[in-house]
Length: 394
Image 1 (tube, helix red, strand yellow):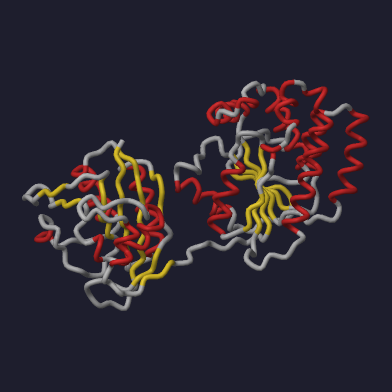
Image 2: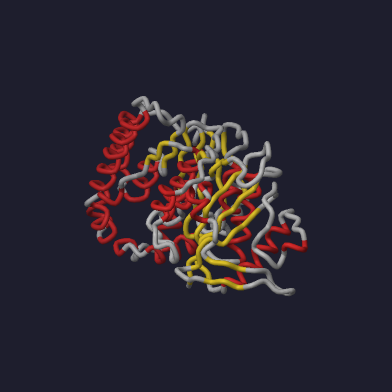
């Protein structure tokens, strides 16, 4: 696999949407996107225009050659509405002008490539000859590869930026989306991806992220080996930890975050305890729970990620935590049923259930966008289901 850096730019149409479409097409046709910078807004470079450019640098891994990639990105530009003058197809000296989308190859590994254009193929020069001259390239490049060394100039991206003579105005663009719901909680059974999604949403919304600290619980590995013996101390320790964390994160004012995203709800203590504790012990546990959590705020939107036990087991095996490998399908199914039964009895709360069996919101931006779109909808109090194929009785 080779590593390639691309710079995306647009100053016509809905530039932010065009950049997103470009990233999706590049990932499908060139290779997996490993990293991407924030979007930067900049004055036009090399010509005058009232429309500012929006630029972003991305890094992908690919099995393709530079010439193959150039052919693909030219097709993507055309597909997204860019019109090129045919007389400039064979040369790298394209006139500076407003454009719907521009995709430049900055680096391909550490290779130095110069290919003259022909009647059948465009010219190609790597590294791009203007990297060191363009502030709108160097600023996003430094966000993801500040230490990358230019193979010709032998300077890092940061050094190139420091020495760049371009004084045009370039500023980070605040593209963080807004959420309708100030407090969102993501829930789901082990292995469904709730922590990953919560993290992605917090970055998108610029939100405070509250993650469950399960990895630090000394009883968890013991519980998976002997549930009968360690169920009660495990559930008590989780309950205490969740209360302390939420008390600190939800009741203390935060001047820097208007939105909170968490990867759990307090009621999961009851759901798990109901599956692991004897009836008399669970009755005592329930009384303690309601006393402790009565004063904590509830999420404005609870998002439950649904996946089949088989899909959950695949994810658990893939992430490779030793103490989780012996979890049985029956246990995962029981937990799933416990959540769904709990939601039937919940009142005065918005609950959104999303089937993620056929979604990969980590590797496919369009799947993440589908979830973002769902979170922009208005939901009534009660349970709302999206693309969920479970029992109609629910």
